[in-house]
Image 1 (tube, rainbow, N blue to C red):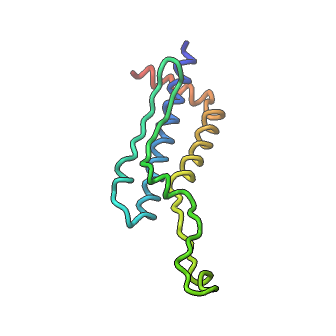
Image 2 (tube, rainbow, N blue to C red):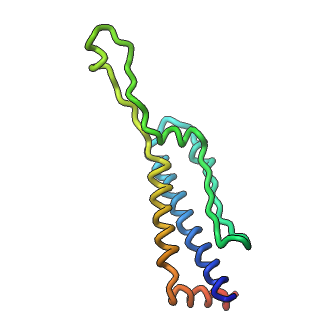
Image 3 (cartoon, helix red, strand yellow):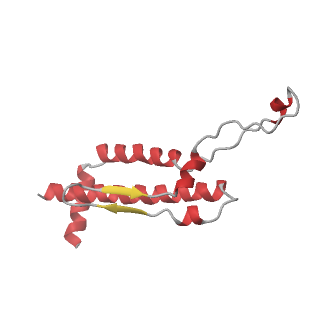
Length: 134
């Protein structure tokens, strides 16, 4: 029973740490890359960590739909062409903004690694000490 509580607390701590880091890093990238948008994308990114009896922990975050579309690499757009070869000169590549996939999947693999290899005896002892202090 005690090991299950230690494991549950360990998972909760990992998810809280990585969730905060994901939120902060993604916020820095949004602030750096998106100067032409309102702060709605920045302000409406809630995240939460929950643990229930059926599972040890769950991390969930939300981002607005247009934030996901900004992350998709757009196709080449051709501006109206006047002659046969001007489309090569006038073609411009629109820019993708790496604000979602880069951070989510980067932290996903970090969370998986920390959950697999992070619960050592030292960490378990520290968590037990935290329980004793409470």
